[in-house]
Image (cartoon, rainbow over all chains, first blue to last red; front, side):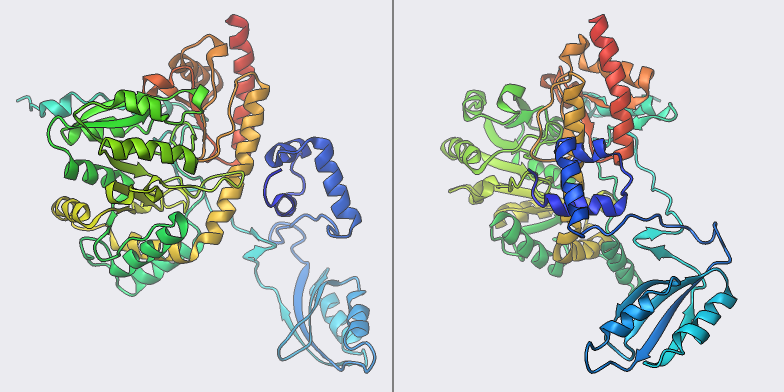
Length: 164
Length: 390
């Protein structure tokens, strides 16, 4: 078995979860059955939570708005930030929600179908929660790189077609 | 007027690989497994360090031996990678790729007619470089049954009173052969007893797989004083175009090589030297990532070749596989030409690396997986057809 096998498997899935399983098995020097069972275990153990497509927003659903919001909250005596964070995370608009160090507490990424809906989410949902002291909203203007994928493909440099 | 080229240059045959390259050039949509360089661009942190150095106006000559800071980095790196200690002031020379360092070593060592031994199949430049330096090239055949390793018996048999230098290249281009520390110790003993100088080109030393770590012959007892260790950043760090190699050797030999280098080249380009400092000091993670990618592709290509009836060992180093194509009934040149014409897949005939490469072709897996996959599909179809004919 190759060294660092599980790391290699997870990296392959992260780069391209749709890679044909037969190819993946060959790369990792595993039988297809063995590979399937390893992936199934990663899923059932909750290590792999899901698989997603990375969409180029310049080319699809261009009105969709992404915003990054800094949220300052008052922690609770029991439970600290967890209860309020999970309450915020449950909104459908929220794609990601992190507790962070620094000048504010939660960093959330939201997606809304248009600017009006994004503003409504902040003004009517997020800011009205008692524990939320303040928010600062940054709208996405352009994406350069997302989840490891570049939005503009660097053209491959030319190599000699045969070299020693 | 006809210009009369010097006899010893005229007598050097055209490179077999160049012939092949020119045919491939004229064709479109060829998938090439014929490329001896990484398909990765140089890792960004290394490119960025070079840009930073350029911005600061670092554009001048360097010391003939190379930037002192770089030689210190090389010394540290070689200590870690090969467990060998070289003095950065007197025992290290920075060259324009390993190719220049090979030329320097041979020119610094050889008197006319001195014999240089090397194992074959091998990198295409060895025999011509020996001839250009006035030496006599003496190939020692290696074969698939020994996994293309050099055996002490065959070395012993090839040695003559004129033998002065032994050239080694493990992991080997084109066969992917590697030598363990025990294998090397036996070769070292022969070198010591016959007083051979060893030139060891270890350019693929980071690219070893299956947890097989690399050993240098320079680390064997009695060898450091008679060995020129050549290495560089081209392959493992994906830096072929920067043209930076280096030689580690006893001070008196480095001094002699420097005499040639200073008049012929002056110094390696400073941009490449600056980039190499970054590579050697902070590139380990990038190398590990690329190595794992190569290892996975190797697994893929070896399985595919064996499945289609072209027996192929799993190489423990380099980014080449060297499958046996004799089942096709074709010579390695015919096989490669027909594969190119019929399926538009370029591989390099084994004979480009010496006559003992007959019966094999070299496929590089320094190519993206989708390309390798497609090449293997086409190759499988071709192999099946040619077997039916054979």
